[in-house]
Amino acid sequence: MVGPRSWTGLFTRSSNKRNEKHGDYSLSPLQEQRLLRLQARLQVPFDENRPDHQEALKALWRAAFPDVALQGLISEQWKEMGWQGSNPSTDFRGCGFISLENLLFFTRTYPVSFRRLLFKEDGKRATWEYPFAVAGINISFMLIKMLDLCSAKPRCLPGINFVRLLGEDEAAFDVLYCIAFEMVDAQWLAMHASYMQFNDVLQATRTQLERELSLEDTQRIHDLPAYNLLYQ
Image (cartoon, rainbow, N blue to C red; front, top):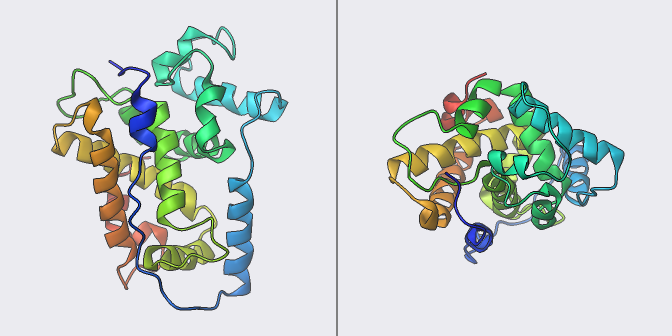
């Protein structure tokens, strides 16, 4: 059961505490190229009038509910996926098109995990569950802030190490998103959380991710300990 519309405020609050800054460092040409491409993705707003954005949203519905015909881009059906209202485009305003790309990557790359989380199949669930789609948007937003991706170059240790992982795999951000979503659900269950505690769950997830991204022996995104939570 999805919580009330007031969850938007809960989900968009974040800690103002910044990660410790690190000195200047150099990027390889490949790392710089991939970081710039990722940062360009962050600048794309969701546009409900663009046919490719409309098709991406329809593709997400088909992946989530392959046997249910979508009545329209504005429909009460969207609430079944955890959007706040009948028009998902209003929820994208806080993060842009990349948050939809993240959800699509999740369902296409790790479909078992995607469906387990969408339908809340694991563990003893709360009476008021977190809304899946809106949670996904806030996970995208949290990662962007955590990795300091809006700076010319990340200045925090997790962000610096992430750029190194990005040099090894251009899909590193999307994979990290999937990992983070699994971690959020695991934290939710471990904390026996309900909807008013979602911000605490998100902060706990961020803290754990920062710890894992600070490990010196992580060479690839798949080396993160929490990667083992994912199922394809």
